[in-house]
Each structure stands twice: as C-alpha cells, then as structure tokens.
Amino acid sequence: MRSKFKTSRINLSFWTPSRIVFSGVILTSFIVSAFCAIQFSVSLLLQPVSISPTSLPWIKSEAECKHTNRMWENGKCWDDEHGITF
Image (cartoon, helix red, strand yellow):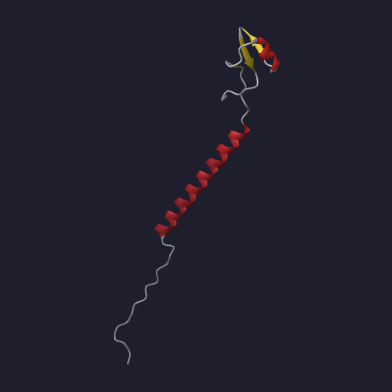
C-alpha cells in the first residue's frame, strides 16, 4: 500500500543570489585587506633608514668618546650611526 502523503521535494540551490553577494563581499574584503597588508609590509621594508646624530649621555669624557669612535662636540659625545627610533 502506498502512502497517501506525498513528500514534496524542494530543489534548494546553495548559491542563492543573497549568498553570492555575501560571498563576493567577503572575498573582496579579504583581497583588499591582504593587499593593504602586503603593501604596508613592502613599504616598511623598502623605506630608507633615517639616520640622525644622537647625543650619548652616559659617556662623560672626551677620551672615552673618542675610544668608541664617536665625535666629541660641545661637551657631549655624539654618535652618527643611530636611527631616529633609537
């Protein structure tokens, strides 16, 4: 005996228009953020190193300053090899 109730099969596709738009937005966001991260990393690595003279307060004598191959000027020991972030 056959069942009187017919099961209706609804053909639901996974790729509905809203899921396509959502997936596109997520994919685009991922690509843009990856591009920005790569661009930032490359620019950080390729920027020239800014070097400026730095006074070294822990060196108090001219002899000690010249012994470490630095310059003594105006009563201070100056080092030309340090970057601005020192």
